[in-house]
Length: 171
Image (cartoon, rainbow, N blue to C red; front, side, top):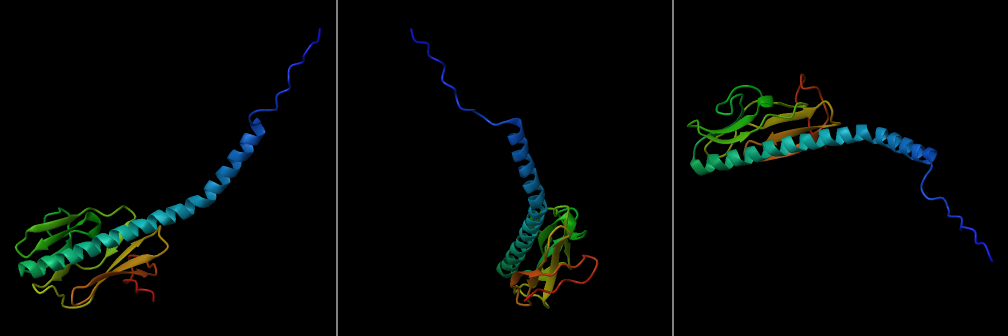
């Protein structure tokens, strides 16, 4: 009678040391990527706030021309009238104090510096106006520019502290 030996199975799975080495590599890569991810998220918040402001400016200009009344985009603490800081939010307000649109409060790390904007009944402004949108976490800032004819655009800008002057767009 022949005795058969059980076949030797190859090792299946990973050893504890192999798993720990892979986890260590993952942690190292994640720690390198985390600061870049924070800057990316801060930059996306800046873009979002800037685009929201441009949308509000374009809407306000359109409403001014359509209704033949002046329309303001202004910071608002109560979302019903002008007054407060941009951090509290903003409103698009017609000359008869009708609230046309409400912009929510800014994310905590984003600041907007600039004066309230008022479009004449023909959709124009008295002069070129800028709003500086910045964040300490982002690598750059954004400038919302509204020309005297009411055209609103966004440009990248070098970062300066919100306590200083409005940043100039980079070429």
